[in-house]
Amino acid sequence: MKENQSKLTNIINMNIWTIANQKGGVGKTTTAVTVAGLLAQKGYKVLLIDMDPHGSLTSYFGYNPDTIEESVYSLFQKKISAKRTPLASILCRTGIDNIDLLPASASLVSLDRQAGMTKGMGLIIKDAVQPYSNHYDYVLIDCPPTLGISMINALAACQKLIIPVQTEFLAIKGLERILNTLKMISMTGKQNLEYVVVPTMFDRRTRASLDSLSNLQKVHHHRLWQGYIPVDTKFREASGMKKPASYLYPDSRGVKAYQTLLNFLMIDSVEVTPEFPQSA
Image (cartoon, rainbow, N blue to C red; front, side):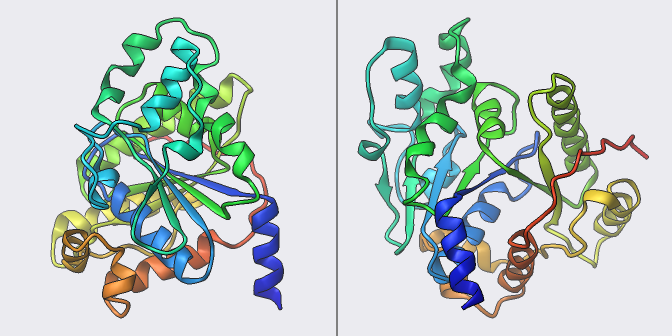
């Protein structure tokens, strides 16, 4: 009964989570796909949105971001050219029950240049998904590693930011950059965004992973998920089969870690004003 009541609440109040870090290769797409798969298996309806011109999420489900005709880029074209593009006409099937995809195209790379000074470009995604609040329980947005209109849209649309951080030095630098971005947004008074830092690709056999995790625990303990996502080759194998790893390897250590993370994320959280720590 409690799960049913929780699900009813989610249908009425769609959960929008953005997955971002201002560094590539830290596990953003893996996080989006795996969390979506786990949610879908629980019976929730999920919309995945790919905001990255590289289109890793789009490619994961077998679509080519270089040749796809209608994509999330079409929503921005509507604003630029006044051409109406309904969200429903862009959605793609993933082959997984309960998961739809709003794909990316390589054209997103030119978005910042084309948009210029066009007003209202930061709320395109938020406005596009609002009418679907009774259709999807969760929206997961996969971001590019660079700050621009795509990331601004993803941050403006979401209630929770998930920041995957590979447990190595350069990825922690990417975390510092995105926290600076959040701090700037907070200073404008427009948004105090709840965020969770998620250590990924942890390998306890390496000094780099151990030192990086220790640094995260020291500097970011107040917003750090206390678990970690381990290195797991099952994620790569699952991507080759175009399915979330939870459908193929439910007992793998990586999937179990993401299930623990999802349990944490689904706990109703109290709104707080984010703190922005200094680097160690």
